[in-house]
Image (cartoon, rainbow, N blue to C red; front, top):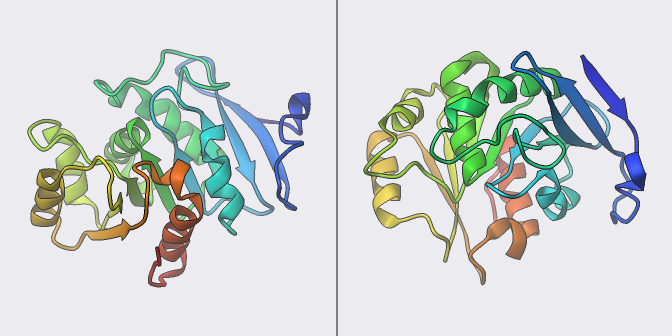
Length: 222
């Protein structure tokens, strides 16, 4: 059951936005709960999954610039979600509660954007429940080119081409991008230029634009 607690501790009072932002929780079958920050009125069109050691609030600047309803999840063991922490070495462990949370918070989403650990968890969730996970937007993250064969197989098997949103000076290796293009010929690679290695922190408006373009089938800019 999804629980809605508006403005717990006045958490969102300082956000420079004129649309609703709410904290929600859902109890999951694995035990405990997953929390989300839901932006905007209406059903979320995009789900965002953060990197290791971060939280749903790390997407604030991106979501403030994204004019689409969205849900940013706290991965298990992060932010206000409890349970065993998700880990880069075992993203599969987080897949089940994350799939439950996606079905609860954003059953009609059009895309899932994940960064770092969040991107790997999104892939593991897509393997576990392909019909519950729609278009994958990988934010400057791909599985290691010499490992994670299971996750590479998920990328290659998706019916809707996955998208890599890559920082011009980011950390995604050329080898990984080459393998991505080779194994997923229909995949899309969007490069966000400009200074900074971390798109979400250094160029949140550009990242928001790249995500929005995938929701509206427009050419991204940045």
